[in-house]
Amino acid sequence: MSAVKSFLLAIEMATRQRDLSSQNLMRVQSAYLFAQDQMSQLTTYAAETESKWVAAAQISTSPELMRHHYQFMDRLHYAMNLQKSTLENEVRKVEAAKSVVLAAEFRLVSLKQVLKKKQADLAVLQGRREQKQMDEFASLRRGQSIGGYLKEDLS
Image (cartoon, rainbow, N blue to C red):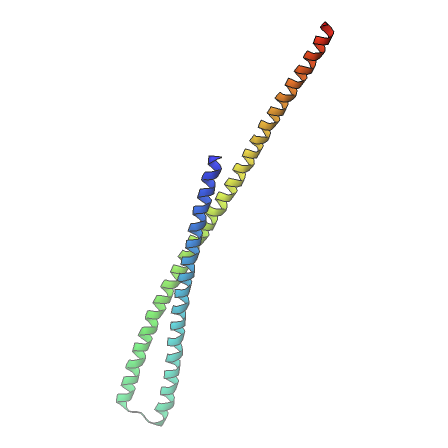
């Protein structure tokens, strides 16, 4: 029975590990969604700024204003590239966290299967013990019955 208790403890620990891995995956996915939202905001802002610039430039513009606009757009595209790198990093983190959760799930399922096999083996062993005891009991009873007949015949 100590083997079963050991497996139950291992399953409990594997369950905790799987739960912690799942919580970490949710945190990482949340960070990814946040980074994705920021990228979306930057992209939308860049598109809006560009369309406003085009509309304003058709009315009137100066070389100085154009220079400022291009500098601003360069900085905005730089920020978008940084955000793209952040987003790619978050994707890697999500994939790694998914792998950890999958490994934890696999370990938990494996432990449960081993426990089930161990319990089945113990049940077979217990059945054999009970059968042996019943056979010995029947043999003793038969011996007592035969002994009783012999006593009657001798008398």
